[in-house]
Image 1 (cartoon, each protein chain N blue to C red):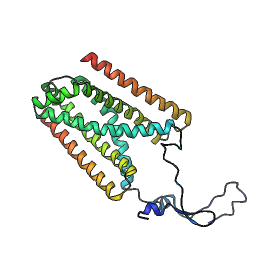
Image 2 (cartoon, chains in turn cyan, yellow):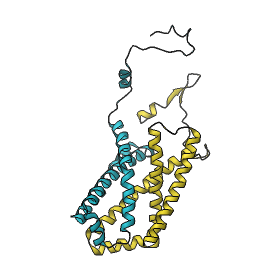
Image 3 (spheres, each protein chain N blue to C red):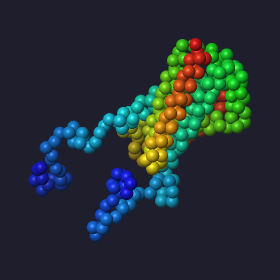
Image 4 (spheres, each protein chain N blue to C red):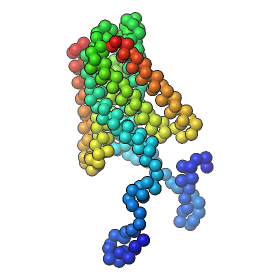
Length: 138
Length: 145
């Protein structure tokens, strides 16, 4: 530690003989939390065009017959974009809902239980959507 | 103490006595006036949770469509009813709000737009844009129908 520059400089500083990376590593893990944050942003960016597409598709399909919906989803690009939308949407929902539960449910057991329950419901809904789109499209 | 986080709340006051450190009050409540930052933030969560419920409706619609003409006509009739339309208007507003405010959050993540006047302007833009988009969607929707 060199503290002799305090007299010369108005802003005191402490020089530590350790690399920036080493200090950052010492501050805690950058594993699951960073991945959660990053996945939330990536799915958000993916959902910008996908949700606009969804809004337009809903407008086109409003009041249409079941055959009309099936014919729309049977077009390969619509099938693929709908599947992308479903995956990004439910992934984004799972990440977001987890944070909300973690913020407001304080009991450890209730917190873990409600997160698991929410994620199970999300997986079931996502699979139901995927199977339904494929059944209508194929 | 039950929790590691509670141990972090223990501190000493100026007399050296062990105390529970004070926590700044929650953004909603009597401690603060409603502000653009807190209101748009809590609205982002509320609309996010509402859209989460909306995905159940999307699932129901797709499953009924895949199940056959009978279930599909039932779900279409529910959605086209007055209650259904009101719920759907709520969901379109939630979607457009979360979309617009989401862009605001992504800009903040990129380190942009933190200055107070800019934050206030972007907040009002989000509110206005989501109302305009919702109105536009339903005007066009009713014309198409």
